[in-house]
Amino acid sequence: MSGRILVDHEIEAQLGRQVLAAPGSDPISLAQIQPASLDLRLGPKAYRLRAGFLPGAGSLEARAESLSTFELDLDGKGAVLERGVVYLIPLQESLELDPTISARFNPRSSTGRCDIFTRVLLPGHPRFDEAPPGFQGRPWLEVVPLSFPVRLVRGDRLCQLRLQEGAAALTADELRAVHEETPLCFREGVAVPSHELAFHDDGSIALSLGLGGREPAGWRAALFTDVVDFNSEARHERADYWQPVQARNKTLILEPGRFYIFASREELRVPPTLAAEMLPVDPGLGELRNNYAGFFDNGFGWREDEHGVPIERGTPAVLEVRAHDMPFLVEDGQIFFRLRYFRASSRPHALYGAGRQGPSYQHQDLTLARAFRTPTSS
Image (cartoon, rainbow, N blue to C red; front, side, top):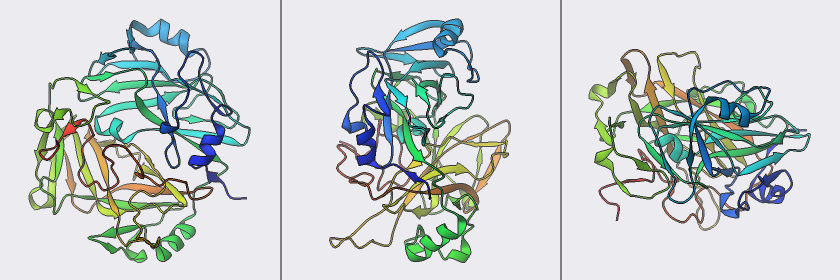
């Protein structure tokens, strides 16, 4: 039997059973449920650490106590986390997974676009950002603001959980068949022919960087800024935190250590019965790092007319990029990332962006995090 990603109504059915509020935490809200993922909430305090560490055997509470220089209270107005410092925060959710269910974790979109590095640690498990089948315990979140100091408050949602039964990724042949029937990516509104795409055996498509036709071509995080209030909307002036970058002749040299926001050349979409995740095109590319907010839920870039017929267009993916060690040349149209598709159990009750209060990334292009105000923001 093929594997599957659980969707919203199935996730709701697992609240209080496989996903619970940790002791002393607020009840889990239905507002945390996305089409194929669940937002996870920060707990009441953050430990400022001398260094990060690899997960494994032993108590995370004990490790936090041994490495902590002090604790920050996230209740009330919260606390400011310093740029470049490692913090460890218990989450308000706990897991009691069935033996057939595993979980994966990823940063939320706004987390990546604020250049906040996060990864989930589980007690007794040696790998980040995953929970094996049958896992029981409370996840903790490692948080490192990399470009801006950031104010966080108890209940802020920086990461997401996705529940999976079995191996849910499509094969290359299955993905090619889906694309030929219902195109998954477009260029300037025209479906990309199958022969122009690279379908990988892990169920992913190789996709490219889009520098041409955009003004600016991207955004670079400014140095030495004020604090970002993470959970705000349109609070901060964009020019106080971001610098526009231009791509002469559709090329651009990235400065070492600087953080950039770009968009994909292709417009993408995720059909209602599939979910997706962004992956690096080559993990061995040491000069460049893409900080992914990796989950693309069912319905990203998907539009239907009043009769439920798909409209032939998609939405660009936003790319969060940092060059390491040396100046690095990037070019319009170069292969830059992969989008891996997974089989969902069914169509979710609500597709990505549907019914959301406030702005959504559903119709984004070169879109910054919600905390930053554009010239047209009210």
